[in-house]
Image: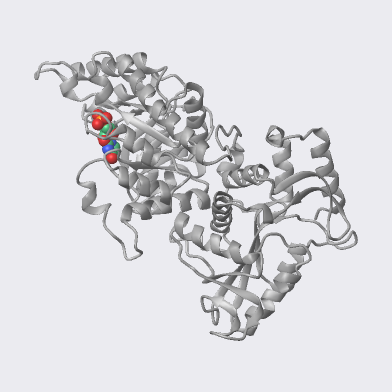
Length: 557
Ligand SMILES: O=c1ccn([C@@H]2O[C@H](COP(=O)(O)O)[C@@H](O)[C@H]2O)c(=O)[nH]1
């Protein structure tokens, strides 16, 4: 049976991507509290002889009381399916009734912890998203790999989200999830890195479950998945330390984390008061962290207010094609921080060729540790989003063995990108660079780093203008028996080299050398950015967009 032919409960919510909806809700009510709806039999105040029907009625009232008392504080509701399944035939009807009580602006995460082969996973997805109203996301076990996750978050459900069990809150989580792998990381760190990789490659909305009972694991998961939303259960009845958990798991903006609490609220004398106290306690720690970050970093990154392009969040298009204009979240972040640090400027600039350009990109101004860290992550995300550079099967194998950074600008770029590929995606490739002048002592020669002979090489550069440096790298690599398979750059200006030339410098490199060129962003995306987010470009007005459009009409390919 396919999902499209079955009868289904209409999902009355819109198709806003899950994390966009969640982020909006968290911001609106300034809360990271996720209220759990777990009608344990022991909390229903029923005699042991109560019928299933009585239990269902009591479970519904129990959940409704919590929803009514907590909705102004709840960033998300998390009913756990187990307690409803335990109520037999009418359990699912009770769950449906409970879900209908949740106001539409509050996201719903159904805790089901599914994990099965693709066809069965599709049936589980159908059960969660078609027969239950208003479910926006689910919890899943990732141990069966990407094909067990995909049915929940791609194609017809591309706007839905999933939290992958990473390091759960129970003591037994150390039995398997904390085991060390031969890659010098724990299994849960691998899961965290894979979730980032799958999110970028498949446009999937994936978060992680990491228990608040293990602050050290939270810190490691946050490092392995710097952009992920983390659901951190275990505060309250399981004894997790709220402050330690938040300190370890919040992202640099004091967000990116949901604190689910079930019994800590339901067993409180007044659930509404308990929810408010939790929100206040969470926000006190957030404020402290954000204040600390601001002190340490004058580069104030807080309160980012852009709306991610809804269409782009579910797209897997990489900007390797200079005609692609939709913007992925990592591209949005890249454009934003390029503006913040002054790398990207709008105005009137004379290029080396004498051409006047309405914008200028000066990669030399990525001049702090924080900027280089973000830059490396953006390059790594662009590489992982490209099917030309990475095998898109579940193992996500790179189609290159070594990153090569041509002197001089490519040297730091190659270094930060190789480190980011490892830290963000668990991909450990070689790194090499060249000197402009050969050394006449020590090991001699112009090449430094990983051996290149017989290797497939990806060259890292900032912007291709004439393509001369890339052609030099091509010759150099050929000379040592390496194969250049591609180039990754920050910005593709997608401009004709001269008015009577039909191709851009990037296209000429692709055509002449037969290699892929992938960019973090391109000119059409820059235009989309100006059209959709003009408020993010300080000092811009309608002439800014018009001059970029004119420039593109005149010189664009
Ligand atoms: O690692 C995990 C994953 C899920 N849970 C679920 O969260 C709630 C916690 O309930 P409390 O009453 O707040 O302890 C419950 O539904 C669990 O199944 C978890 O605890 N740990």
